[in-house]
Length: 206
Image (cartoon, rainbow, N blue to C red):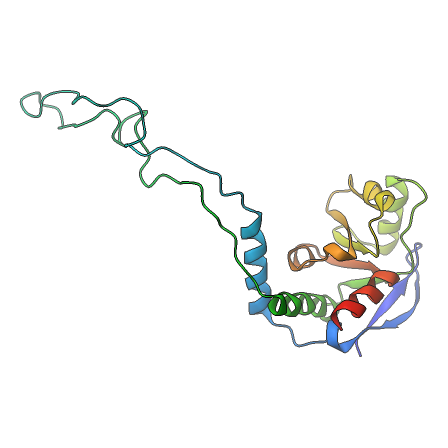
């Protein structure tokens, strides 16, 4: 069974914690992780970009000059793409970029991402990260004690105080365990998770 360190807020290692082989110790599937990350980024796109083709730009109904005898290149419309204020060649139009990924593939990708963090020794488990009030200074002190600069921090439930404490710290994100995803796991160097959140992850994905 994979084992990671359990730390307190002072950055001291309290003990080791054993993790489930079915979640944190599977064979890493990079292809599936890539597929899910591409889909996740594609699904974020609004697809509302739009530009006008030469058929949609107003004006240009008359030929700017006669075909022959002027010494200039022949032109049929001042709204052709090579003209200023002309139409756009292959203009982008609103479209749907979303990709469908099956539930089975999503689960495999997430477990592969979690296993990669354990294999690379980039995962740390915290005893507790609850704050009585939003305190960025206190949160920064915890990160300094852990010697961490860029990290994804996962808590068991939506914790407003933890979120507000970390939102002004560059390179740090706090999310509830229900929002855990492959892209965020791979984006951040370190993966810090509370002991309660680990139990929930194992309960859902084991």
